[in-house]
Image (cartoon, rainbow, N blue to C red):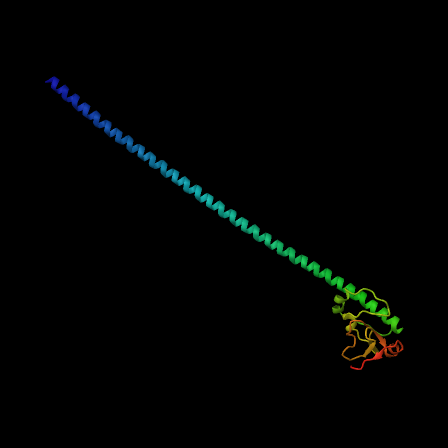
Length: 199
């Protein structure tokens, strides 16, 4: 009976150890699965964090680039406006100088032609812009510019040097022909110019 009892204990021991082995295997397998699951979760979380950081960095870079582009465009616009203002200022200064020079030349020519310095000669700024294209001319022939067209002279006639005809103040062609000069009517007649038939 003792042998039988030992045999039963041995069988039970083998069974228990086999059952324990399977339980341990299951426990080990379960532990391994838990570890794998935990590792997978950690990796997924790291991937998500990395992706979010990359997205934020990209968004920041895009914002910075857009800001720099906007600033660059603003600077370029400001530079263009400044350049335009400077060019306009230089043009205005040049126009004024040309207008002054044209007025002086017109006064000198009027003095030479009429011999009278008391007759006023005026020019407008409009005259100066077109006067830049005309250069100094002899006292006997004056190229008409807008300055000559806006000149007001009393007792003077406009002589069209091309046609040999003079026009009185208030007539259609007074101071408006391409080639001409201001003279007194007596001087125009002495020089051989004839009065216009159509005024």
